Structure formats: C-alpha cells, structure tokens
Length: 199
Image (cartoon, rainbow, N blue to C red):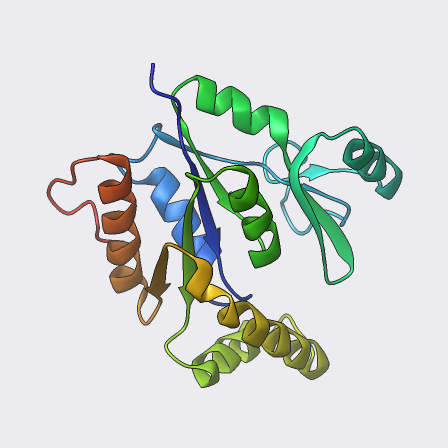
C-alpha cells in the first residue's frame, strides 16, 4: 500500500481556507482519499464545536505535557492560544494509504515541511490586501483592533507564500476551488471527471 502524503493549506485569517478545506474533503473523488487532521488547541469551543470532531480541546497543562512528550508534528501559539497537530493521528492515516489535510499557520507549515520533505504546501490568499480587510470586517466577529492585528499578521504570512509549492487566489469560491482541486489532483495522481471542481 502506498503511504499517504501530507497536504498543507495555509493563508491569512479571512481568505476562505477553511471553506476550501471542507469542500476538498467532501467532494468526490477526494472524499475518503483525503482526511482532515484534527488539531489540538487550548482555546475554548465556539458555537457547535465538539471535542474530537472539530478540535481536541486541551488544558494548557495537558498541551504543555504533550509538547514535552513529542506528541505533536508541529505546534504554535496563534494570537492567545496554542494549536498543534497530533503526530499519531497523521501517521495512522498515512499508514492506511490516506492523504492527510492540515489547515495550519504558515510557521507550523514550514515546521512540517522541514521534517517531511514531500509535504504538499498550498497557500491561499485574496486578490488584494484591501479585499482581505473587507472580508474580515464583513465577518463582524472581530473588533477594529483585532482586524488591524490580523491584517498585520497577514502581511507577514503573505511574505512567506513564495516558500509554498502553490498559491491559490480566492477571488471567487468556485474559481479558487477549481484551482485547488486541480493542483491536488495533479500532485496525487487523481483523475478529475465531470464537474467535480465546481463548488
């Protein structure tokens, strides 16, 4: 059985990477061949999020223990909370021949790439910084100060996009998903048929 690859999806907050991540996992012929990596985090659940389905919600003390014990493929502090990719879950899926999709911060992505050279890195961005600002403000979930912080962080992340294998520009969701699906299919040797690249 061929060992699965790691696929990394990164990009600034507000670019739509989570939506693209979910579409890739649920669209044939990727569904079942690509599985999501459930991240661990020290933040509290939001809305309908559930432990073990959306995230592994850990106490700061437990998270620190798992860092010391080497249980994470990568881990980072993002704003006020810690996030990490559990190593065992990734290795188990790869051993089953499944590809593992990680939706992680750019620094976490580079840490993974340093350990796993064949990891496929894809960066998602908006057409312009102004469009990113508009999307962040339109979400209505962040204060003006928080939007400013996220935009500053986005500039630093975009500067690292050149270190990725591919860049997807999310102008419209259908266009961006078509770009993403085409890249992933070519990299993994998956044949696309019909309208599978339509969101």
